[in-house]
Length: 204
Length: 204
Image (cartoon, rainbow over all chains, first blue to last red; front, side, top):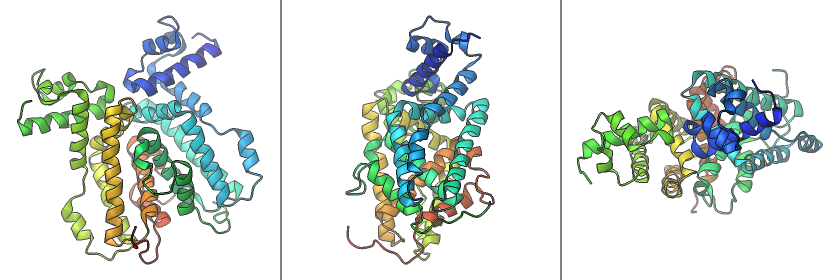
């Protein structure tokens, strides 16, 4: 295994580009080499298999799409109410739309996971960890609503991002006066997250 | 254009199989011919182009995944409350999980739509029409909540089906005591749809 970390990162990012542009079936070592502008054969020195490449793409996208800790720390100085949940969801939406290629890569990876048991196992673990982290974060921050609120909000945001990033025209104008995605994010949070005092903060 | 409608339907269904199994990039006339067990060259007599094939797959999946009118008519004899919305969402979930291949085909088509403007235009139109039909149905049936309720419910169900059909292990057990998908569907409806009397039934 070659060990140049910068080259490895560049190859993984090239893999994300190929994944989003060509679909999972187009993701070959050769296509990654071409995308990265390196000699054919380079990727095979960095990844033991296609599953290994996919797993490194997952890890890399996790970093690329992660919230900025400073932004989160700053948001957490605000009152722990529904407005703060809106701000957090705006941040999530902005990250996904800003790195649309990365988010589309994750969607391709989901579909590829239906075909590859090894990828399904590792990717399930990483998405589940994100969901549980979201529940833990919401609880510890004292935000309104419990695990069930986080779950339903998670699913609605997943649906929103899928729709907005693949078929934006479906949502645009569907609720008159509700811009997409910003105002729609506000409607989602108002519908799902209670306006009342924090609850569900007991031990669980 | 050859005109045998049964053969056309069989070719389109073969296209759905290829789409779900191989991904959009694997969808070629030759792969469809092989899947359908017909001589190579047959598909090119039935479809003018790959976009034409994709558009016929969209139309076909619309029929395959549509609700059974008798089931809907029967449900509409019940009180127009939140329980009825649950029953309708159970029916949607059952249709999608029963025809998992068809639903995965739709997800592949969304990703392919990010690459093909012609497909994006036609597919956007058909998904938008479904969303508007959902709003019209909800309103005319006098179900609780307005267009905004339908929109948020639509997005949460889209997220649920995406997650459940691609990475089922993510949701399984994430809310203790809440089975997936059935009990989770109930939690989604309880969170999003008001328990009160029908509202939002004014003109709009």
